[in-house]
Image 1 (cartoon, helix red, strand yellow):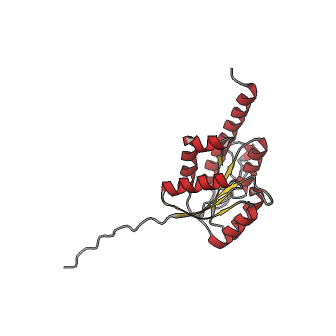
Image 2: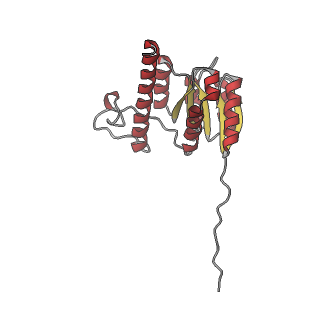
Image 3: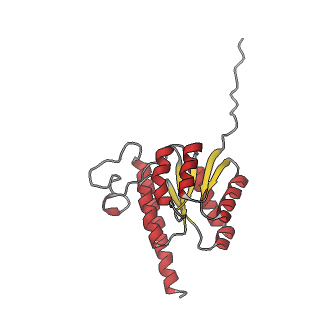
Length: 205
């Protein structure tokens, strides 16, 4: 009688990560968080967009954390090059979000960035914010290889419209619900940032 084989799952492969940020403190902080979380392997860090592109070409990481504000080639300019060199890399944008960066982040989502995480306004706030750390790690854990496809705004620029941007036009292959999900999430995120900015300008009640 042939004994039945028991399949034992092998160890989970750690996701490879490149961190691109012009602040050495932020790079170190992100790397430490990923190391403590487990299941991540930081293969390289970059302080500018040009180096980020080079690392994408060399390492083909599962995920890249990409700062929008960097000297020389910034995150927005580097994004299309990164995805061209490594199409399966998921790019998580990281930025202190003001009106300008919110607009740029929206544009980057249409070009293939998988999501955005809003940095606290100060370095101490970033270090001490458990909410920011939890959001940062959650978004990296949720990434699946190959999901870095363009988010396409809904019709009229509102969530829930046509995923392709015009009434009656279907979403490109592979987007569908994912595009609508990112659509709603990004608009909620932008709305929260606007509300926070208004409260900041008005001051305490």
